[in-house]
Amino acid sequence: MAVAIRLRPRQREGMSERFATSDPTPGWDIARHPLAARVLHNRKFQFLLIVPNQIVFWTVIFVGLFGTSIPGLNFGAAITWYVWFCLVFVMMVVVGRAWCAMCPFGGFAEWIQRKTFFQRTQKTLGLGRTFPEPLARMGFIIPVVTFLILTWIEEFFNIAGPGNPAATSFMVIGIVATALVFFLTFERRTFCRYICPLTSVIGTIGSMGSVAGFRTRDRDKCVSCETKDCMRGGDDGFGCPWYTWPASADSNLYCGLCTECYKSCSDDNIGLFLQKPLTSVVAPTRRRADVAWAIVLLWGLVLYQQFNALSIYNNFDNWLNTHLHFPHYPNPVAYLGLIGLLALAMAGISWGIAALSARRDVHFERAGGFVDRGSKFRAYFVPVSYGLIPVVGADYFARQLPKFFKSAPRVIPAAQHIFGFAGTNSSLYNTRMLSDSRIIMVQVAVMCLGTMGALWAMWRITNRELVGVSRSALVVRSATLGLVLACGAVAALLYVAIQAAN
Ligand code: SF4
Ligand code: SF4
Ligand code: SF4
Image (cartoon, rainbow, N blue to C red):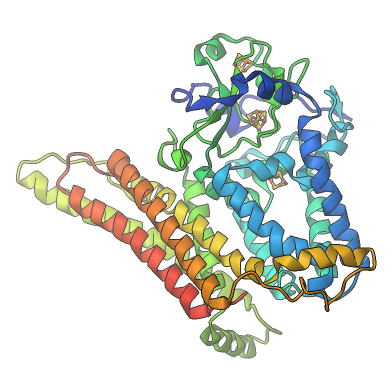
């Protein structure tokens, strides 16, 4: 047994790095509405969000293991790969971490850790260890690596094909078992912040979303607040499970929308703020290199998934497997090598923009002009990577669409099949919502929207952070916006080339 709600100020970047407050709170505080306030103060709120997903989650496991082996007719495989993954991306783009608020993986493990479904408890189950500081400092690097590993496993066993439905169950069991081990070993939601394969995807792509998260209403009150109940936990709520101090949050990156800070702050100084779309992409007060690397690695992964649907890639993978004596697709060397190369290519382009900018500034200085000597790789790479988030998000979403439009109606006969009704002869089983050509049109349209969003974000970021009054303004603007256009065009062309492949 361990007391879970402990504050170790130097232990967590989320807590220790910023006892300085961030920029003024964004947008509209919907928690001011009396009905919203009542709902958010209710301790059963998150429990009720999680319960329906928990029911689906256990159904997925049991039906995957004991149901039909026909993937499209197995409810577990069908709902996971035809619908769920697509919906999670919609939630990310529109809201941010909405999925985390209702996630059955973290929810289940947290119920056990807290020994309650929703009450405020003081003692928790488990060792309550703190996550090692050097690992915590890696931020999104560990989660993006776990996401790459999980995706490789999924491709190797053709889990999301979907292939054998039992494989989907084993994957889900693996995730929840890992989550449980972490929840019982470490304090709070260490798993969600530092390990979960989905957290880097939701955190980065979710920064496009219009929910800024729970933040303080009056930051001056927080500076003089002696209790810091929002972090330590108060009578009515736990300390922030995500190690976030709401007064210092400057983006929605690490707010799991769990409402605990809202319940625990005795000063009623927390609100739930909406923001304009892309605000957390364009204007966080502090950008992070680990987030930037996560973005380019995730971009590398989704491009890899487009490449591997080309027949030419199949030949390459077979050739490599023969030479490396690896049984079958996906060859891990090609998988990691291509993703790494694509990520390094993005870093190289950022370096090139920085170098070009610096060289032109030197010429300008010799001619008596102003020079910004701060131009370095990091200063360009990090904001440029953030500017690509809408393209990356659109690409992930577009990649899910063929399965959704071809097979989502199968979820209904698959659900009926659990009770012995319906089969592969059901009309819905054989219904597809769009033809291949229409799916390609939608994918290209999604890429166009993502590219437009990225152009706008990159324009704002470039003007805010990369362009001073130096001579290189035109060069930098052209290069960053050209990069967005090139990324969007490559992804759209690949969708045309792979012809709505799953
Ligand atoms: S970080 Fe992962 S485990 Fe935690 S709530 Fe989000 S999706 Fe679930
Ligand atoms: S408990 Fe309330 S007033 Fe105190 S720091 Fe947290 S949000 Fe601010
Ligand atoms: S406690 Fe507040 S800041 Fe922390 S994750 Fe929950 S809602 Fe977000």
